[in-house]
Image (cartoon, rainbow, N blue to C red; front, side, top):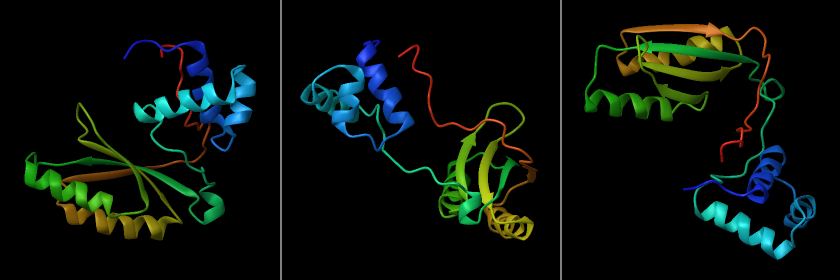
Amino acid sequence: MGRRDRIDRDILALLQTDASLSTGEIADRVSISKTACWRRIQQLDKEGIIQKRVALLNAAAVGLPLTVYISVRTNQHNDRWAGQFLQTVRDLPEVLEVHRMSGDLDYLIKAVVSDMPGYDRLYKKLIKADLSDVSASFVMEEMKYTTELPLDSF
């Protein structure tokens, strides 16, 4: 997929900032017709560039003020174990992200919990996946948070 034009980038930037904007509002801001804007958004959806539109919640406001990054190492590197691990983390609603990593660390998990006992409950569920080493780092201060991707090279 080649580079997109400025209008596509502007539409995506607006949607990343506020997905509740109407097609008419977006069209006005990028200076195209409502129909042309709607077609572009539909094409971006069809191509999978727009994955979904969601509401971002304040974790603390819904009782989940503690963010934890969990480092996982395993001695198991086979399809059966990987499938079991994947199912375990998929079934845990506190787990927001799971990344298979390069280097010394096998997996990095981002989760939100209510408090330390909440983390302990999550930990006890995680270790059912037969992990060899689990360590956690707790977020003390969120200094930057965004879901907006830079679009300069798009």
